[in-house]
Length: 210
Image (cartoon, rainbow, N blue to C red; front, top):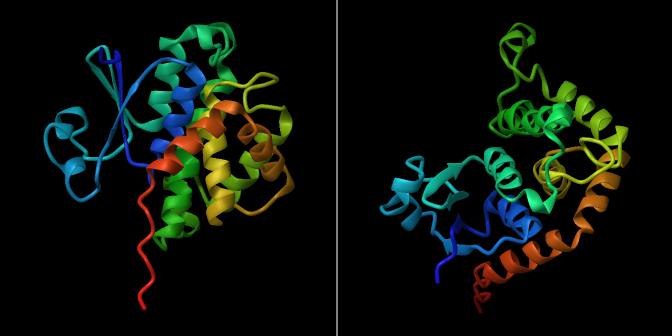
């Protein structure tokens, strides 16, 4: 019997964030691996996400896209996993999850594209400048064991992925607070399971030419 939850991904994508989140929930799910050059840009997937991007999920027939939205959705859809604070205590949970999906990702993307706003342009950019974003993020991850307080939540899946990716690929500086936070969250069993699953789906390296 097919699961109520279908996960569309590619192992070389932000889908790794959602794989981790799914493993944290403990819910059964089916995986559909898409190819960037073909199935990701064709039907039937374009009916799930017309942007032709991964990841996406379909849960009980309803599609959800965008990593932070999927993380928040799954935490609510599977409350028994304890991945969201009580509704009365979600200020930091929402604040930092969407800080990472907004200002942080925007600033890093612009930097990678060679866009560095001048002083006047920084007033229009929601993130101001990359240095400011990084300093704010550093203080946030250093304030508590987890991004929203003393307990691990779905916000740590999203923020933590951004920090771990940033350290791995050099888009964030190697500051002690970032390294300690990344080490803490990537020690989780669900993270390790997700990483093993996606690594197994990676294409085999091409043999070296003679």
